[in-house]
Structures are given as C-alpha cells and as structure tokens.
Amino acid sequence: MSASTLVDQMKRGLDAPICLTWELTYACNLQCVHCLSSSGQRDEHELSTAEAKRVLDELRDLQVFYINIGGGEPMVRRDFFELLEYSVGNGIGVKFSTNGAFIDAEKARRLAAMDYLDIQISLDGVDAATNDAVRGVGSYDMARRAMDNLAAANFGPFKISVVVTRHNVSQLDQFKTLADSYGAQLRITRLRPSGRGADTWNELHPTNGQQREIYDWLMKHGENVLTGDSFFHLNAFGESLPGLNMCGAGRVVCLIDPVGDVYACPFVIHDEFKAGNVRDEGGFSRVWKQSDLFLSLREPQSAGACASCGSYDACQGGCMAAKFFTGIPLDGPDPECVGGDGEHALSIVMPGSAPKPAMDHSKPVTLTRKTIAIAR
Amino acid sequence: MACAASTEHPTAEPVVTVALDSSLELHPQVAVRPEPFGALAYHYGNRRLIFLKHPDVVRVVQQLAEHTDVAATLGACGITPDRHASFVAALASLQKSEIVRERIDAG
Image 1 (cartoon, rainbow over the protein chains, first blue to last red):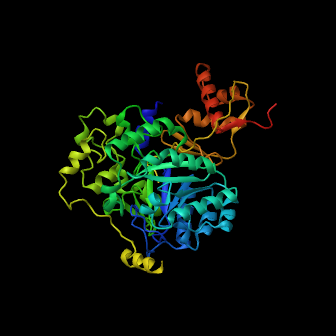
Image 2: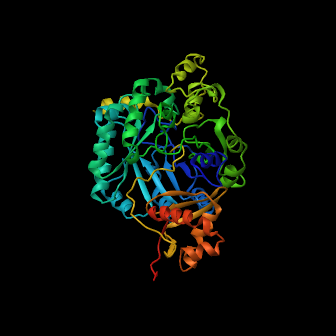
Image 3: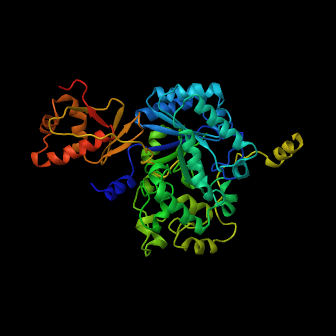
C-alpha cells in the first residue's frame, strides 16, 4: 500500500485516536498572549480525579498508546502525579506540556524515575526579552530552571517546544543549539489564531518571507526536529516536509478539554467542532466512533476554492482552525497560503465576523499587571 | 498537540539483516492495535509508531514467536513463496524500528 493510500485510509478515520490531547485544567500561572485555550482560571466543572480515571480506563480499552497532556498548566492539578501514574500504569504513555514553573529539583527526580513519560517545556524565545513578550515576565527563567533541573536529574532527552512567531523565526538555529546543549529534542509548531491567539495572530504570525525561511529550515533540519506535522501548509513550496501531509482533526486527532468536552482538534475550541462530552452516555468511545461531527469529518472533504490550484495535493488546503478563526470559509485557502491566496481571502472577511472562541478562562489581566508593577 | 503526529521519533536505527531462517519475535515493548487498513504498532520504549499496512503482515508479525523461523511462520500464515522476499524485506524494516527483534532463545 502506498503512502498516499494510507493517508486516504487515515482520512476515513481510525478505530481510536493516535494523537489525543487532553487538557487537564484551564488554570494556569501564566497568561501567554497566544494561548490556544484562553487559559488562566480553573473551571468549576473540570473532571474530578475519579472521572479522569474512568476516561483513562476507556483509553486503555481502546488501546490508545499515549496521550498528550496539556492545559492550562497541568501540573497545578493536585492529582497530577496520581493521574500520570495511573495512565502509565495502564499502558498509556504520557507526553505532557508545561511551562516548567513546578519542576523543581525534587519533582524533576520524581519525573525522571518514571517510564513512558515525555516532557515538553514551552519556550518561545532564546532570550528573556523575546520569550517573555509572549509568555509573560519571568517565564523564560522559569523554563530554563526546569530544563536545568531535568538535566540535573538525568531525565534524558526532554523536548523544548516552540511556537514559531514573527519574532523568533530568526532564532531557529539558536533554539537548536540550546536543545543540543541539553541533549534535548527541539519541537517547533505552527501558531494558530485560536483562543487568545485570535487577538494576537495578526501581529505574531510569520510574514510571507518568513514562511519560506521556516520551510527551508525544516527541509534542512526536519529529520531531527519534531513538528507535530503542523507545517503541512508549507508543502506548497515544493518537496513535502517529513511527516503525514494531512489534517487529522476528528480522524486521528482529537482534544478532551478540562470539562470533558471532546473537540476535533486542540485548536478548535468552538461549539461547531464539539463532538460531545466524556460524561455523556457511552463516554469517549461513543463520541469518537459515532458522533455526527467526527463521522462527517471522515467523509471526503471538498477542495472548494482551492480545487483549481495545482498545489492542493501538496498543502491540502491547510489548517481548518487557522481558516475558521480568521473568518475564512473552511473550503477556502489557508490564511497563510504560500501562494498568496490567503491574503485575498482575509481581505474579504467582514471585520468582526470571524467566530469567537467558545470559552475564555483568562484572568483579569489588567489588575495582575498593576499588582506586579507595584510589587517591583 | 499535533496535526497527525506519526513521525515524532528521530532516533538512530540499528543495522540488521533478516533471512528466511531468522528466528524473530514481536518486541515485548510493542503493542499492536487492529485498524481497518491492518494495524498500528507502537513501541513504548523508542516511541515509534509504525503502520502495518496489510492484514497478512499483521498476522505474520503476531505469529513469529510461535514458529521456529521466518519461513515456517510465512508457511503457517499461508504466504505463497513468490511473496517471501517482500515479507523478508518488510520484517527487516520492522526489525530496524525494533518492532520485531531476534529471539533470545534462538538457536
């Protein structure tokens, strides 16, 4: 079976997800300006420990090999280690994303002692100025301390996870050098206009010229850098980047949010892409196997406005979430279409008509900033 | 958090040779999950996710440990001799990814 027919098979959906993201909480000590889930404050309806364990039981029965845990900041949950151990103990590996605030020397040793665990420390600049402009004052030092602690505890190759923005494209080589210095793996992913990212995407997303830089850099380094296959829209430049060239939303990918809602992917927290809730009868399995939304995503998708473009096979029309939250029709071009069609599509979006994210758990930011200013 | 995520495993690969008289088994750290196209195999140690793209390959992989060597496994699974070379190549590729391994009790 050729690679393309395998991708066709995967587009028709799998019996269980390959890449399941589970955001454990909306609570976060940071307020990153591009947070895809608009996190900040805990939601009172978040899954309890017992409910979370029931979901893990289901995932074990479905033979989900690993889960990607995120948030919010997942380590603020008091049962974080309990859930981690329960998951790994049931044969479900864990990769979790963290800002590193809670990885002190003792926690680093505890994490290093666990099997089947991967850690991604988020970092969006190789210096405090670049990083903290996006992730908040002190977050660079926080992340580096966590990396130092993991290295000192001999955790092994953790991951440094970078969201590529206009302000850090020029730092890709330096990110690689930093990762190499820790024996870590570099992971770079695409900025989406999701969550608070909807408000900052215009200023932060890479320019057209930078898209080409990212593509060239990945062609050169791609085999040694993780991307979550998130840059497939760049394949229209020419030769395909390593990885699966497809949108896996609802087909091989999905998101469970902190209150148990199941979305097609982590970047589309909106009612239109909500397939159900793990608390519903039949649980997660039923949502994955039978929800109308997921079944419809597994039907052949129309190339729409891109049907006549010679690059459609290469870029697949790009990212559904990027289109949706910028107000472009789902069968239109990606807003960062490298052929330039995104700019035109954006120019005809009626101002204010782009859908708003479904939930906002942001903290009242103004007050926090004032408090910090006074404290200093 | 990924779009498809099948490829997050850049690690070194061992050099291997597989022949019809090799004695192999599924690696104990590998889980195999049936899918419409065949199966997915996941290695918990090196985190590799491999697509077994044909039901025959899935059957062969799962029966390796029950037979003395690759030839006996292929015979038991009803794989005709004209397909043996391609199965040996597929098994070599799977051994490279450590989805299958040389049997410890071999010989």
